[in-house]
Length: 230
Image (tube, rainbow, N blue to C red; front, side):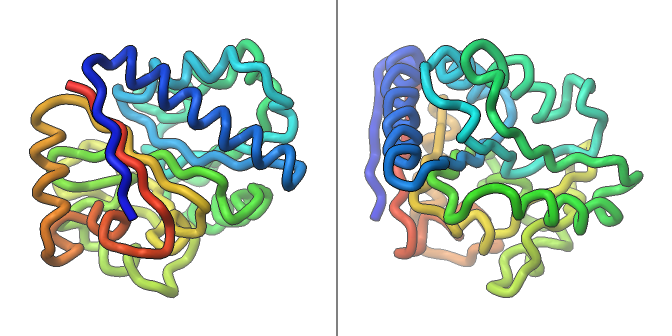
């Protein structure tokens, strides 16, 4: 089931999605005593993270991790962890239990097992997985044409896998499809007309390998909400 929310401005989108994420986390804290949130990096979610950072929650009982990560130092501007620390993991949310994917291993291939072990601390099913959408149809670091894509899409895939995108600068670590679908809800944050056109293509039937985001839009296990603004 897919629910689509369209907004006139990015500010309206952030206001509504921030309220929805907050409600999900509060409900989880009240009903289960802990909450878990998986987020994506990139340029799009920064304003949302800044909004969430000021929300009054018992952040000590909220676990946050990443859907994927570039294999760069956490101080690097290209690091998703760097983005989170600059936007979300501050103010009221500074007390969040954050589980990074990047570790001291020299390569994501060597660091995948340790990242998967660390991920076990995050309560599952995840209460919310927040994903983005690339214009090539990728989400997390599930890229079309990546040689590791079939393994990452497999039902028995490990929790984390190293991925080298065909046309990207950095090697990455990603959560597998099975891990990302171990969730109570999924939300896609999409901005811009080009991304909306990509979303329309992804919605059409076709091989998941063509547009890996289809793995989440063409499934009936987890409800999906689309948040879009121009």
